[in-house]
Image 1 (cartoon, rainbow, N blue to C red):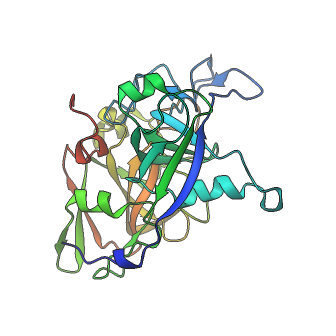
Image 2: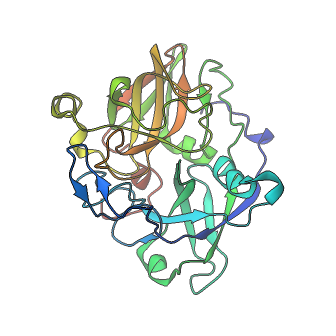
Length: 296
């Protein structure tokens, strides 16, 4: 068992509502090849795309699996304060409970956060998805902000419920920590999200436009909910390139056709000094780890 500061963590309520899909000023996405395309994107209740499903191959751009929630009751004194709290305080693995509508009382699990649109993503069983309605309220019991690995001061943990950390069964190896992942990804192909000055919300994208890199790293079979290690990436105080650093995150939305974008990754671990050792494990996916599905 890893030594963590679980007795010092605060569990607090945040709430969001199921939000509608949205389009921008243009209904077209312009692909990296210059082709105008009309595709499903962010928001809504996605009935046939959940964690455990492929991240690539859909006729889609930035589609969010399961249910997308947002807090629209923002305090005008603080701009986006309420939604920022939902996004920062929610952690992967947190329990989420529907508190209004026909699905009231149903429970789900937070699976990630999507920056730019600032959505929190929640997985629910199919029978709950059928009962949900846009506008239904979802309460998240936010727990995990401030989580520390007491024996690994050179590894930072963020966006992670202690229950999910326990499910990973990470193994100490001298002064390093072995973390299960399905894939490793070079920092050279990371795109949208670089330059952010914090990684306690949002995500950043794996660009999959180079066929040779996809083949070399086996990225065509990425799944939503996969844990991936990004090499030479430091997320300690934002997202930067640093040789020898390692960060681990979870794939939160589908692949994209637009330049600079791809499957998004929400950060879970980072070490600027390379104290994380990725261990390839095909089952390192939240759907398997937390038994969210029985069909994969």
